[in-house]
Image (cartoon, rainbow, N blue to C red; front, top):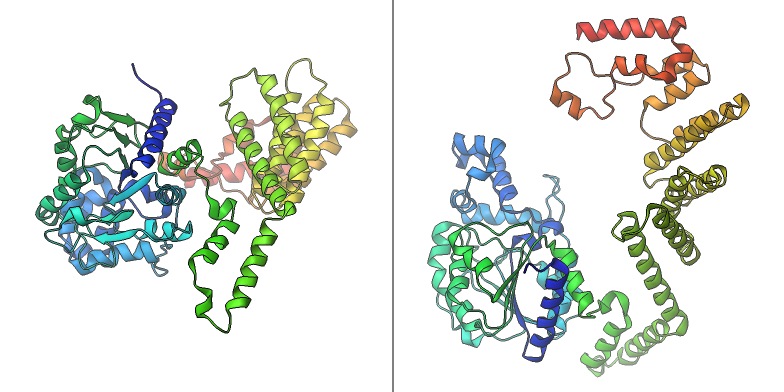
Length: 539
């Protein structure tokens, strides 16, 4: 019977809880764990390598880098670069490179959650095929002390794996600051026995978790295969809907001791596991815990002149953070976070309920969040959306809900005018146009159009809507003036050009739009149409 993802994650959490009692589980991580942190996956690294060092690659490889990367092998591409060039390539992403527009990699929540799980004893050893130092940085960030042992096997030949000390982070193929980074076919093949020793010494009686690792063309995968059976489970966290369809991977879906959990985004999955284990991120949620550790682990008397000043300061900070007011504020923030998460579930329709009931829940949650966090602009945005959607339902007092929706949209803009202003302003525009369609009173119609125009004036981008409003207000010169500011696709525009065009308007769209009927016979509009049609033909 196929188990769903949630059940399997609970099963994994239960195994980790038991593993903690037996010394901790083993975690093997691959490149997928660091992608959201800013370290590109293998295929993107190949493309970047070929683009930046083209003289080392054939014309065919350069062509495939542009057209079909799937035909290139990562190990083969890296073989074409020297150790120095490969090291330079990794450094761009780990440390950042301003000249190439590459930002320095930052910790993601997979790193943070893994480090906390290591700190709390759920994992005893982390094996990584990555070169980046992000897991080490995460251990520092979560206040892990003593620090885990760090082993770099990339530059080592034979290794006595039995002497590894846990907790530890083991760089199987080297670090970016190490002497060797093993990522060519020959380097990995020569390293095969060392990898096998590490896997064998770790043993099959431990719980194994593998995440962000494809195992493609890697002798480490053979070592994992040889270790079977996994007497205490192997959990393979797979990002896609299926594991790599190779003989080396067949055991993952065939062995009853192996559990593959599909569609596992690293950040979401490890945070979910931490939640299931009640493994809180104390450095964020209880910052005084780290200060308490300083008092326990530092010999303050070795600083004769500053001993009392430092300890007094730390104790004062702890006192401030542990006051009822501070704890109340932390709990308050937690409440807001939980409500926001629930709100996002409702909006994504993850919680099944009738449409109208779902909208009521969204409105109720938004009202609660606004009481706890009155300056959270997105809350008013969601609130306005729910009210607007409710107004469109049958048998509803539309005016009441539309008036409330207008207030909430305006509040969202007031709370933060810079955040998503184009989207917010357009939503207000849609609201006014909807109200415009409901009334027959000309004065009211004009007032609503002016409001719609005012909302569009908040936008930083050009749009056809503003010209429509001027047309409906019977202001042909202003309508044409705005139409002249917009770019239009012509009859000869390619499909690709159409896809790349942000607005994607054509002259025919304008002519056929009912909103432009009030000015269709005005000389200025007719002249504009004739001019644009000529330009379209000649383009």
